[in-house]
Image 1: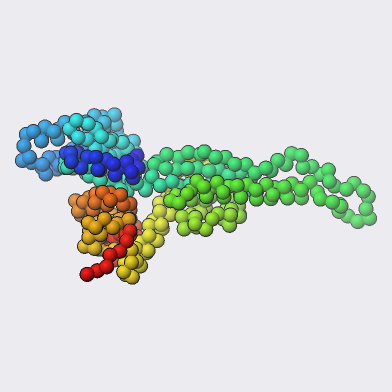
Image 2 (image 1 turned 90 degrees about the vertical axis):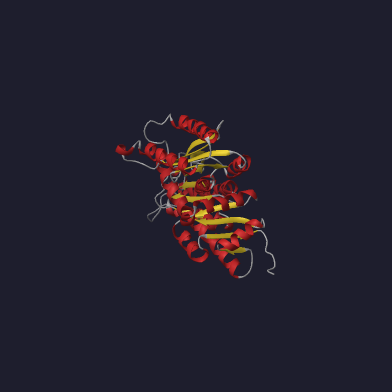
Length: 366
């Protein structure tokens, strides 16, 4: 998958060239519909031809050459597409990009100057690191998820080796009352376990803080009591980007972890986006570094003042050409772009007609 910077570079490098942009929805499970994407692709290609009707035989030939490159890349997929979506960009002479993505994409084919960039924004969320920690009193498993790839780079174990902790500390001296003097092996083992777990949790919290950094998300799972004990060791800056997921357990397979963390990360990402929208709305109403509505957002883009562009999915779907123009303008000034869905998108539609922006600086109104 493309990173934000790679997508921006493609947009900037190809803006003066004719490019065939192809987006396909691969989120199908019914075997009877395994080749439905091919029919949808044909329909979208025909629509793109109609839009380009009358451009002349030379450009029609260029369109066909670009299409053949896309079709060659897709030719390896006889049935289902390999993931939830597929994206390809081709000039008449080169397949610039052609790969599956981990999020559903709209069916769309466009032949135009530069790449059609806006639909890819929803895939950029996959670029953000999601660190997942599954922990109990003895062990922690750490997973990193980014760009659709799941890895398990760390496996920490508390120093809880109980084999040598026997009842050797029990007093064998006869007494006139029941019970024993001293500390039993079970008591010593439990104390050692607590010390080992505390050491592990501190080490784990340091590692998590380093790995998550300033932009990553954190998902916690495992034994509830240990998760609760880990929480105070984590820095406060992670609290707004962290979620606890009760469905995650230490013994889960990688595939089970991936499914559960993707759902948890989606909810957490929507929460983070909602908080960003709250900040922008508050700033806009106070005359600060926030802008709401198409007119004010477009003005801020023209003045290169946008730090982060917020676009609702309804706006993307309802005004695809205008949305692509705005996203491209944001990329020109190296601004971030967030596509909001769910409740955040509904609020953005209501407050800003589907558009808002966090600004780098404000200017005095004339």
